[in-house]
Amino acid sequence: LNYNQQWALALQDLRQADALRARPDAIVLQNLARAKELNGLYAQADRDYTTAISMTANEVNPFWLRAALIKFQLGDPQSALDLIKRVAVRFPEAPEVRAAYAVLLSAGGDAVAAQRKFLEIPDRARLKYVDTAYLTQTIAWPPAMRDELGKITQAV
Image 1 (cartoon, helix red, strand yellow):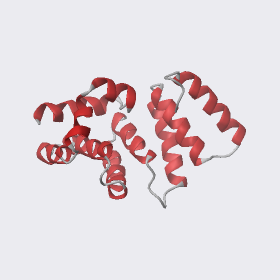
Image 2 (tube, helix red, strand yellow):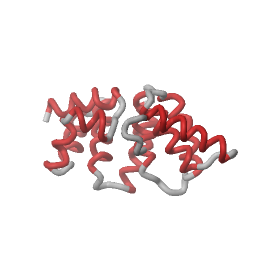
Image 3 (tube, helix red, strand yellow):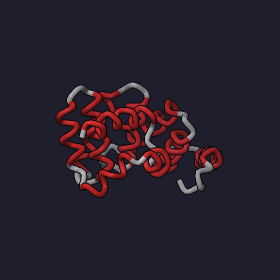
């Protein structure tokens, strides 16, 4: 979503696109979910991500990562972990996938595995995950993910 952080406007436009489409569309739904997420409407975002995933279930897509982050934010760490495992198989080298996987391992009580997964991220890329602006603005992780990530970054 490139709305210069005018996420309410993005949400309005995407709701209109969804209404004009008149039937579910995976691309519109994933973008609508992202806009809802950026506006703090996590439960609504989860519903849209879930529908979009059900429409694309045969092929793991990058937006599945966002869906996992939202599930964790909503207090469903097991569903988040299930999704992130599938995303990690498809995108094993992606730093954000590794960071998210580390967070979910940490939340599950396996601090050692979480630290090990986090340290798999190349040094230069790993530095981004201690940068608050990067986490809140660039990749816009939900608060629960950022909080749990903080535990890992303090430990390594």
